[in-house]
Image (tube, rainbow, N blue to C red):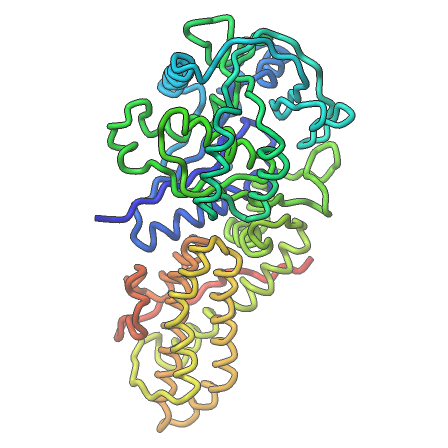
Length: 508
């Protein structure tokens, strides 16, 4: 039976203006999901949209339509963008899905009936764009600590979740599960800035707007967006039916992949909700950094916004995916620039990978009419290449298990760089002049083709379109993960297809 792996991204605010920073989380999650599938896991990869709240209600009113009409109009934008990026999600959840809304109502009622939710009055500070409540000590000078916008003071009847009740239990869970939050700096931030100073009960309903899931036993209230949004990770699996096939198979989640700005919701509110529901907690929450432009946020007002599909159209989907995955050390903030994207595409994809594939297959056609044979006349430098290619599988597995995606890619690129150096040192063009060295030449070309195949298999999660092109050029059916456990799996006596340019060098 295949091992199970459940990975999620946050559900995104539906927007007509997604930028490259929004894509970052989803590209990483997709590469992890694809890698797990490649290695034999039964993967459930979920993303979606968070469609309730005061922001949506206001924008719909300005547009003169209902909130549902508003979100329906722009929801396809997210799906189209993910399709453009080759995002291989298994389920796309909308918080306006009927089954989700009904499940959230049942969750709210269950927590109320067991006295984990109670009615009171909320007075405090609220950030409309972030849909976050803050204390005066957190929102210094009435400024939201997350987005930097001004918060407003609100006062209304509300229901509260007894977050404080679970403080000690949460700290104990952190102690017993040291890898629950990664990087560790995020864990320390949660403990020192939010938990140890004392958790306050959380406002979980609103009466000042209507666009939300109604509290079914008190319809003047709608469920606070984070209770609504966070529940998506289990409602999509059939909860509250814990006997459903999906819930039994995939819960608890293996990885919640989130931006650092929403780590506290996923590592404080969400675990406490699950404790109250007597459910297992997710195995890990990884809070990655932001992708910035020139060290700052990406926005239309700053003049640095560009639709990601423009980059895809200009440079190709795999160049965009590769840059996002390779350029940023996972967990840290990273800087995006078109110049850096071009530089990385030229250096790694055109000069290293593309050049290697093109010159190897071209030589195979020039010297052997594309026929693949392996006389196995190896020397010391061949063994070095073979060992590098063979060790790559385990190295990449270690890096991916540690979520060091950029380092996993760099290991593959390092092997490709060595393969280019191997060509320069073995000088196949010189061997081609001597008929007695034809078997040695065939061996060198086979070792190169096999190294390319192994690297292409391991690059499949990251640049799937390019890997598919390489497999086609190699004319091989050996594209599965198990096939790279041994060196020499590439079929002999096949005829390679003609080479094509994988990446044109960009001169800008």
